[in-house]
Length: 595
Image (cartoon, rainbow, N blue to C red):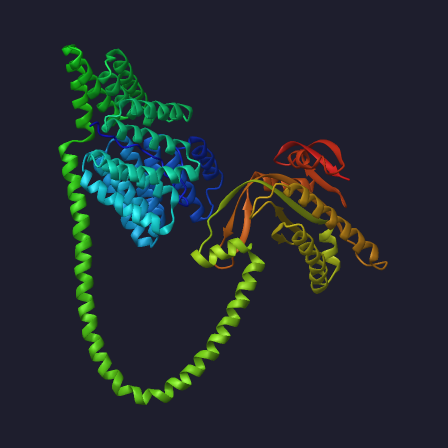
């Protein structure tokens, strides 16, 4: 029967999400962030580099940014991602020995990081390389390991891929029943995930099974249906795999011209996409077709091309290197097991000796343990009380989601938010007031206002970012995205302005009265935690700078908003167009007052 050649899926690195291909636009946007914020936190830089490396469509650039990660950190999580990205690039280029070495490195880093899911994806990638190299026994072993781990951790996306590829290996061994079972499981998962291309792959491979069973009409129907879906998805890699099977079916049905047409189309697609493996297979199919049609010159020409591409992908030296890699890995695993057994024997001897000593000391320690137990209970009570106190303090500094991530992982991953409304306030003439008031009175006055501001933004679901002197900064739309964050931010600003007016009116004559300026802008930001000791949740981006300019160009008692914010709230509030105003370091910007 005709053996199926493996399909390639692109698998994203964070956090277990399945993607359909690299995204150069995403890589370009992250490169802009990298240039704009070169002094960002280490974890933020590493996160950007990992995604740039994966999404960059230029192989040399992808490898360059992966190696930058290796130069900047010894964190096994990021080293896993760098090694995995290198493996993907070498795999797509047909450098199977380098790809396998990189994926085995990623497996080692995954093991060191303690993240079982990453071990599953590394096993899956190793199975892919062995599959392409023709080492089907090895690929079946590693796919099976991947399936077991990914099913255990509930990684549905990668489990679907592992099941699909395991079915592919069974198909190559003519185990049609096992192949069909794996494909059906994968198809059910793809359907639940809404992954249209994945379903098309299953349909196409079931067509290959039907061809192996001699059901040519049903096989052709399945393959044509799969190709139609994949053309809509612009997934031409898989199409170049399926076309040779259709060529065989139409040749058997006595339609050689149509068979040649499908084989030629497969070769054209493979050359256009630069796929060495598919170029080799298409040339092999054309050689077979021309031989059966009696065109020996064309058959020989395509056979030579088939051999050349086959050897470039699957040379003997590379196969030997890959076999050595697998042997070294398995030997190291066995050696680790032997070392563990020896350690257990030594531990058992120590336990026997320790048990004898312990029996002698038990009577002496009885009274001490009683007192110790009482001391521990009291200590645990104090520790629990302090833990609750520290948790409460942490929630006052960071959003709840961010605080939980910091406690769990010891660090916080920076996140990008596409649309956030930033609010700045500032007291007019604060410096002159500060010169006339005692430090104690000044702090008490500022605390009085900011405490009320805290209550107002909490009421409207906004997040306090920080205060600097008499400036107060908050934002709507993070750490959870909200569709109406601009409206809520403007409502909070109106309440703040009203509170400041009422506070001023209630003061006796002669007491200093604060007037407030408020500015709001809406746009994308990057949010994260800065520092390693005194944590601070902060946001960065051009939208923050513009929000600050909106405040500095506002007037006492007024709310000044940018054009981006105005577009989102113009149906909810009466706004007054101020015109185009020159802003320091920003040029001319349109501004509006909220009445």
